[in-house]
Length: 269
Image 1 (cartoon, helix red, strand yellow):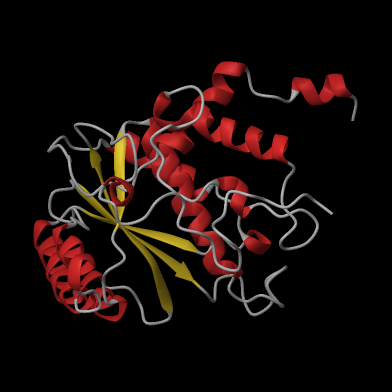
Image 2 (tube, rainbow, N blue to C red):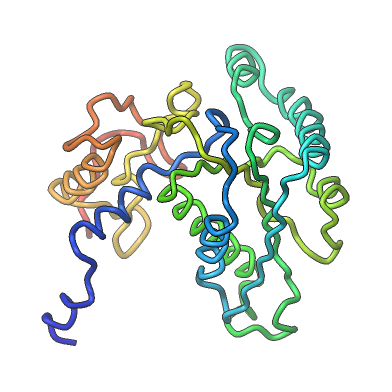
């Protein structure tokens, strides 16, 4: 492929910026939902975007249960309350106090709840590319969730993933067959605003790890040169909250599994 051909395949500058904007401004939304309904054409755009995710062996293992019924939402909310009460016991002291102040769902506030499932038998016993890593169907369904999430941000719709649920009990409420795996329970709706940073970061629960600490070259532990590290940080900073340049408000990173939280990075091999 010539350089001219490759350039012709690029998005325009404005199109490219819009893609990155959706990525960097995506939020896990638990509040600020508006009562405004999501129209059927808009909902179909979101679901079609999800359906166009990549999948192992073109398996397309996902299904989407669209929930508008208030009684169903109430039942799911009760499952959350029970699971969250149990989860809260894991945290004590200041961490426990903070946990109990966090808002971790918008089940009843959101106009639409969406249960995303993975049919692990779809495509038969021998799905191309799945013989070695069986969980690739689950990974594929996660790609569908991310597609929907980004499309929703472009539509001005907030999405919140409720993970504190007993999926066995949730299956009974939503009527999902035993052979099908629930992968995600999402809350969708127009919002009054999108926060400039993730809720958990703003609440002080956890900081975002600088991307340069997560990039290895050729082998684990071989990190970027200083100038490459600066470029990674600048790209992340350009899109951070719509500001150009590095985010000056970022707190000290918490560190990454298997490596130091120090700012000094080794050169590549």
